[in-house]
Length: 225
Figure 1 (cartoon, rainbow, N blue to C red):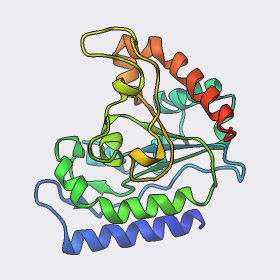
Figure 2 (spheres, rainbow, N blue to C red):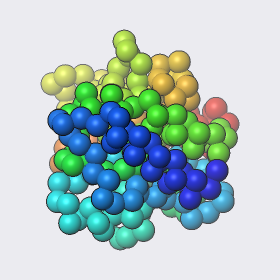
Figure 3 (tube, helix red, strand yellow):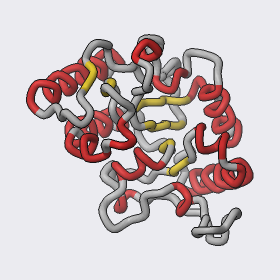
Figure 4 (tube, rainbow, N blue to C red):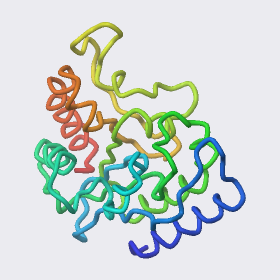
């Protein structure tokens, strides 16, 4: 599947949902094309999954062409480069995509039920994307996408996988990752704090390198990196 096919399928999903399953709590914005995944090399060693590209200011949405703005210098690109450095890969070896590739009228962090309602076709497209690259490490960014991908009954917050317990400012448990039988991707993945949480919460900064070292070592032992 080429990136153009990913976008065409995302448009079909967006238009179907807009016409038949749109929700007044947070309508789909179909005035812009879906955001293209980041891929600049045929050698993909790590996949990064974010939730959606919607930001509050509609005019600013027009400036988003590539997932996580990885075509532009800035905080998100710097953050992904830190991830790459810890995993001993180059940003050229990253495939970054959103679970929801189109825009909503408002950032959907407060309309989780809308995302759940629209999840099935977007999840299927994401799984098809992952199949393009075989068995490589998968990272997810932030709690919102984690909550959509984890099966009922399993932990759905980054703090858990990073070893934090409530009220503690450092990890007190062993690091963990979301194993295939716990999530809807049916693939192992490693939950990472998203860049805004990383920049605002000191304990995330202190744990970032440690968790990514755990990720690197685990992927090496699984022979996927």
